[in-house]
Image 1 (cartoon, helix red, strand yellow):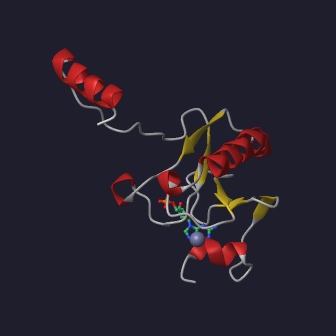
Image 2 (cartoon, protein in one colour):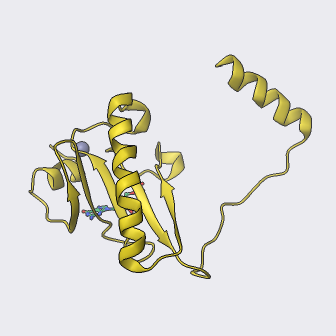
Amino acid sequence: MSCIFCKIVAGEIPCHKVFEDENLLAFLDIHPCNPGHTLVIPKQHFENLLETPAVVVLQLMNGVHTLAPRVVAAVGAHGFNLGVNTGPASGQVIMHTHAHIIPRFEHDGLVHWPTKEMTSDELHQITLKICKGI
Ligand code: 5GP
Ligand code: ZN
């Protein structure tokens, strides 16, 4: 087994565990964006969110919903980002489904992702494709 997160689940690599049940594990990110940056993962290996069965995604989101307020309270944050990087182009490095809970503080250096200008027609064309399921 080469997956780092599977090794953490198996106890072969240590982690700062903050939550565990039969389906999920949550632990602190080793390179946090902010104090309290937490990763929530299904114990079962799936490569990314879209490879993860819907029932497991629901378990994951339920875990996030339970844990996020605890994380925020623990570090005295003012909010949090929830991130699920999906695919290398998105920045996913560990190919085991995981959700980032990143506590945010006022004026903590957050840089929003860059945006693009698009015409109403371009937005409309994309809307049609998404609606058609292309
Ligand atoms: P990704 O970019 O794949 O969405 O995020 C992977 C995250 O896993 C990164 O934020 C990285 O710091 C974290 N990470 C990578 N290896 C380890 C590890 O061995 N232990 C812990 N706790 N976090 C890790
Ligand atoms: Zn894995």
